[in-house]
Image (cartoon, rainbow, N blue to C red; front, side):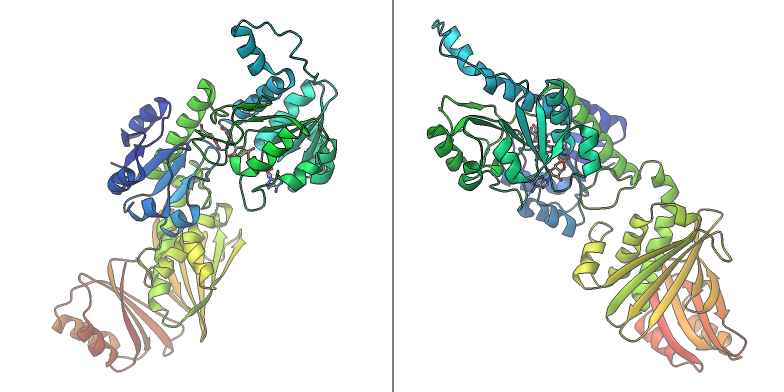
Length: 525
Ligand SMILES: NC(=O)C1=CN([C@@H]2O[C@H](COP(=O)(O)OP(=O)(O)OC[C@H]3O[C@@H](n4cnc5c(N)ncnc54)[C@H](O)[C@@H]3O)[C@@H](O)[C@H]2O)C=CC1
Ligand SMILES: O=C(O)CCC(=O)C(=O)O
């Protein structure tokens, strides 16, 4: 039974879902990095929010780990390249907390416009400072949305409902989408120059880090108010502090900070600053959504191989997973066979899909072909890291699809190119589920792959089968199945023999020495 660790506080629904789906679960929150490292080796899955840092170090100790599930959106607390290279799928729940976070940004905007936190504190302190708090109206004000994805577009929608004018800066926002949303797409400088309120909704990347700094603040209108419910590193906090002190920026509402948990921060204690402790996603509804979703996604992956919302591999829907499963075995076998008979450096791999299989999502299948192909070279390869490893090694990967197959209803052909030659292996499914090899290079054959096999290329001459049978028999090797194929009588031939035990080097050398044998190779699957 797969076992999952929940290491941040998640709604109890997550535990229920894991158990209902046959996954054992432990909940241990507040672990120090060294405590997490000490126990992570016991788990197949790790479910987190933002507190747990899934570092390279933690991943190195996670020998069984197959999936990290983030109950939320941002995955900047996970070292994704390290997870990928260790073959760990990283998933998030991209929509479960978007509305809640957008609502928090809107709440922050109102709080800034009417100084609600300060007015609340003053009133409850018995001061009744009616003249101290003079707010601004939101109607007809310009809201600048930086990053108009899931959350940014919900914020825009709510702001339009408040009769604000919304300008958006997002290099990936199309004009059509901007028109649909009712926002004006502008460049960053124009947004900075026009906005009365600026709200940030981008991920933290090299392109967005320190986006709001002294230089960009200098381009904003005097009296601008800034809201950040995305990620702390988007703002240079010292620069914002200076702009608040000079009075150029009238206020800032921050849910996120450069360093979290933010127990001490340059912006704390300023009248014009409103802070919440990374509460953007903290509503009962959002936490239930993300916990339920992450548990379902992780359990599906661990139990049935379905992959949803993965950030480092192709998705496999729950509907596709059962259809893909028999092809997965075939893809891996073809890749592994090709990898074992390929001796020189790989230059390129083409995977051709014909017939029924071409109608499916074939990216996971190609990943499995690559995994099978690379496994003879690298133990740690799996379907998550195989495409990355192949690209790192400058192996060109191509996929082609033809909806009509030639002789078979469904067919996968793997063509492997080395510096010297190209080799192809073709396979199909018999009865829709049994993988069969149906072609090795130009030779048709019909064989099932088994744990130990002997692959022989020979000249099609009388006496070969007798010699081979005697050699194997003398060595005490029991033959399970024997498949032969040839291009034409007397020409190139192939023998594929399933045997009950691994073939030793000594027996292999004897087989190589037989008359008419061109090449012999022991394979294991
Ligand atoms: N405070 C909180 O508790 C929460 C914070 N978040 C954070 O909110 C942010 C936004 O989340 P989503 O809307 O779901 O993400 P998303 O991926 O749907 O949208 C992000 C948008 O930013 C845009 N973008 C990327 N680089 C940009 C750049 N240089 N300039 C302008 N736009 C750029 C992208 O094109 C995309 O449209 C993320 O950082 C996420 O981690 C999300 C949920 C809760
Ligand atoms: O889990 C949380 O409370 C934070 C949510 C968040 O920041 C995110 O989903 O990106």
